[in-house]
Length: 228
Image (cartoon, rainbow, N blue to C red; front, side, top):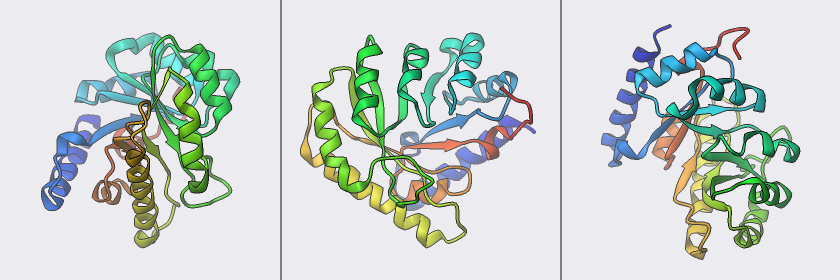
């Protein structure tokens, strides 16, 4: 697998989509999701020009951080247990899975600087997915305003894994509407300018609907069995 070629293909796709819909491709940030690959493959992504690495698990993040350190902006993109916050908080710039006040309080307590957080919203309503409900979002974001180390930079969601593009698009459209609603509140700690949505199978639709961060694993770095 040639990660350089994969990244170039993805960037070309992003450029083409943005030209078609009138967006600036520089506003689209690619996060290489390295959960299923080795440290070497993660390094190959950085060498290809990727600036953002995303990990789903504490163990994977810590292992790669020990080697790659500040070569990347680190994103924690998986479900985060409150008790594990202390193990990752000094390494990450972004957390994509803030979905409850208790987790936010732990992040605020452990961080020594503001952490850029995406509030995860379960737009699809699937029981298998984490995230606050759309109805809970306003209340949660307002509660976060008392926590000085929490900065709500945006919202995150995962669309259903389906071939039905209309279902996927509706999910992303709803998250965009929720983002605009939070922006309109003009809360000091919640600029909510970003949208984290779209993965290997649906990132093109996500960009069309306003994504600014896309989380790409398989089509960028692949899937190595036994990778850290």
